[in-house]
Amino acid sequence: MTIAPERPRLRPPAEKSPPPGPEHRRTTGSLRASDVYAVLGAAAASLALTWLVFARLLPFSGTVGFALVAYVLFLGLYALLVSFDEDGPAVRDRIAGVVVRTFGLVLLTVLVFVVAFTLWEGREALVHLNFFTQDMSLAGPLEPLDVGGILHAVVGTLEQVGIALALTVPTGIVCAVFLTEVPGAFARLVRTVVEAMTALPSIVAGLFVYATVILGLGMERSGLAASLALSVMMLPIIIRAADVVIRLVPGTLREASYAMGSSRWRTVWHVVLPTARSGLTTAVILGTARGVGETSPVLLTAGFTAELNALPTSGAQVSLPLATFELVKSPEPNMIARGFGTAAVLMLLVLLLFVLARIAGGRGPGQLTKRQERRRAEASRRDAARADRSAPVSPRSTP
Image (cartoon, rainbow, N blue to C red; front, side, top):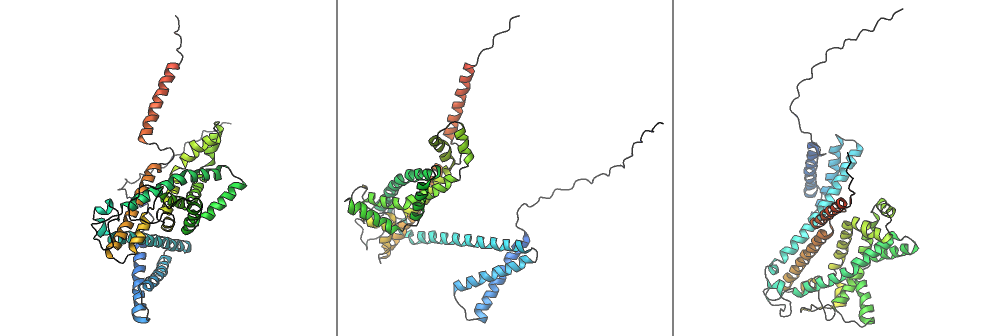
């Protein structure tokens, strides 16, 4: 019995696909036109309803109350409009997004207002060159703005903050490394003390240095004593922030370093600290921001003077925050203008310090500077040349 071969099945002819039309760009963002319309509609309706309540229905008044009522009505109306197209979780997500963006906008507005108000009030003093090149030794309360300046305060702030950073940065980073790399009961005790000192009032730090250093050890009021008071305030901030940053370094990097035979201190120096460099810079910035604007510790430990004192180890020395405090207390308009100008200079100086800190330590792990890249390339060429010279020469084959 023979089996007939199976006949091949005939496939229907494939339909020709239509020619491709013009491509349409797809929008990858989550913002849609309906979202914009919902926000604008809710804002307009809330303003109209609030005006109706304040002006026609109830005897309410006040700008703050108007803004709060309008914002609450805006949230309710926006949730109602979004619920027409979305479900419950999406509505709650949109409301949370609006609230977070509102808080961010309010904080940005306050920051811009503070900076603009300070610059505007101090504009009359900032336009004079002597404001940056002279001190207040020859300028009285009734002197015009073309006499006197804040050179003594700028020098005092730079010296005091510089000495405080020289004391707190290495100490804080070493303490943070100890808390992270050497766990134990003593490390937990130190971490608890550091967290408690984070909320230490500035006046307590000034009184501590005044009682121990000035009264106890007999040191006179000076910029060095003020630097010690600022260090007491800056040190817990730097330790706490650096501790958090170092703990974020992946443990696999440490394990890889230990597997290659490196010791603990070489692992910390060559692996942990370079990886956390950007975060450590942020820790230093936070500590500097805590100490650079303090007034009471400097007043208790450094005193006040209207003359330039560039020697931080002896004599009274003033800082920019303290000079601002003393100048604004005066009832004279010129002194008040000098005070706001001093505050503006303090803000610009802090901004400059932050930019320099970011430039110095803002690179991420593995990112090299141009000089480091050139050194790395030169080292690679030397290694390649040395490998070529030490390579064995294969003997020629004899016929």
